[in-house]
Length: 454
Image (cartoon, rainbow, N blue to C red; front, side, top):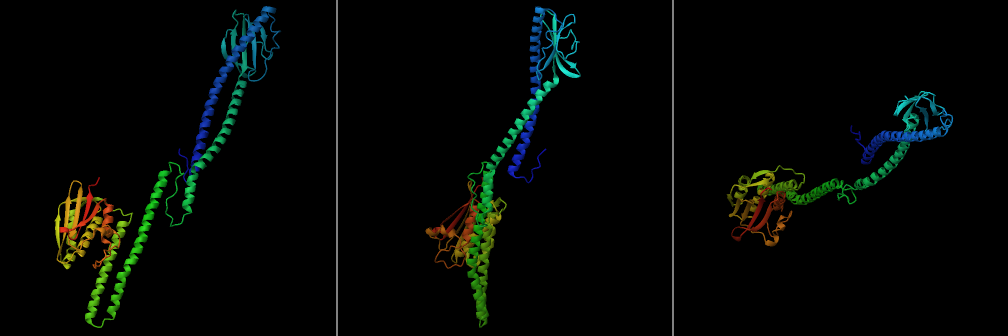
């Protein structure tokens, strides 16, 4: 039956279980010792009784040989001492005459004159252990008895002493055990106190250097959780700071255009200002969409289902979706895709492809070409988006993946978040991303390689 220990402390549980275990073992060992000690003591008493009978019988035979049969007069005063080894005896001749006997015993035999060995006898209403034996010449028989109560008293006294000693040792052992348990769990109390005293912003790892080895996995998992919370909080703060900073520009532009619209003097000026206002709203909308995409990618708890994704189908869908933007900018889209698959999140990979195409179309000059390729190999799948735009200098190719970074000298409006989103999604899928020269050494070619899932 399990102990009702719900809500107990670890120290209390260990101590309670050790008390129950120790008490049970003590009771079992005391019971076993009692029965074993009783049997061993009874054998010892019987052996002592046998030896005493032999000695008294030799003395009686010596007296009979020296002085003749005296009918018990000479040995009547040979009473033994009282106590656990107290005994009484009778010595009979073979013709049923009493040679010697203890004064407290009756004048009749305790046992049958033909008896031999050990038996039980009743003397004055009490049970006595009896033993009978003859001398070598079969002329004298001794019947000797020993009180059964005295035997039991000695065994009980021994058991009582054992119990007192065991209980004292149990108290000492449990006291030491409680102290040992307290010392063992003290690192946990210190860790709990250290965590309780922390401020809400303190998400540093908990010091578990002196924690028991069994607690290390728990403290390690807790520290990992703190690290994830710290990263999530840092991302949230960075996102808030970036969003508040970046949204000021389009909001300011919208406000300016709205003020100009209110003060327009004619319809032509109103139409031109309204168009500028609409463009500012579009830029703000796109910035918000990219910020939300970045937030979804950065959130550690995002648990998008991992499936086998058809890259060629996703690419064709994005080409169709971006064709309107390409037409407005007079950019021709060339699609060269083969069947290819990758393991990951279809919504996130769709965001990656959308940003690659959007970035290439926006920076490609009018009447240029953006080429989209997709290939499958034994090692994995590769997606390449190439343009014939101004290109990215080698020194800037790593920095273009930083948030809100824009290459100096480029007038194309944008937020600088597109390629940052691409890299984060690629990292989430274990994909490799590289930037090279575009077609015929002109423009930019961005490759994303999705390795085969292990």
